[in-house]
Length: 210
Image (cartoon, rainbow, N blue to C red; front, side):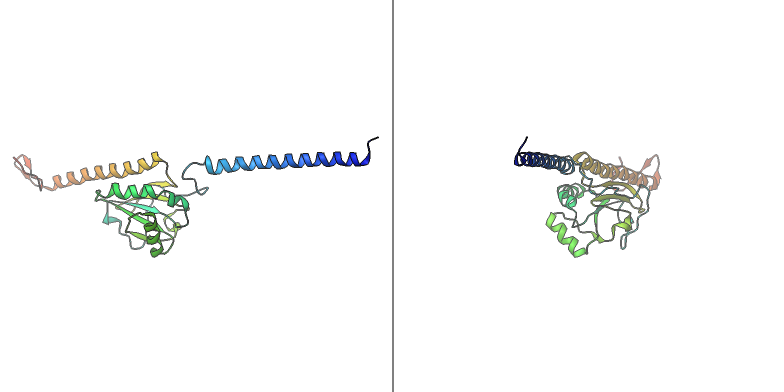
């Protein structure tokens, strides 16, 4: 017959074993969740069910005249958004590469006070002067960062949500540059069409005819 103390000790050993096993299983599951959430997470997925305005949506912002530029790229940011801060290198690149595009302007929309927004952009090294304070719901956005391209009629032509991977960053720049080139060609054609014919030639301002 097994002595009572041996029997109790055996039970205690088994309970301890299963308890340690349960702790190990929980630790493994927690590790898997953390890896999926932080290491394998795709850029730009900050908030589930993040909304963005669809192409063709008419936007209205206080004190914003869309006709001032053929294209306005809205950078919808928040000081509390770490994805916004991590996207700063791309925003600085946007500033550099659109500097020569006269029909493209960059504008930051932020839910915080404008002065706080200016300090935030300064901390990021992002030189964008035009800042508007507005609730995200006003422009149909539920998460940051969100980029919205708006034409001179106030209509959305494209939108990008979240911290963008390199291929999506390139897509934004290509969209801005291609739209700039196509609209410049249309503008030149409009000038040509308005110039009266002289014989069989058209005289274009700034260009000599032979």
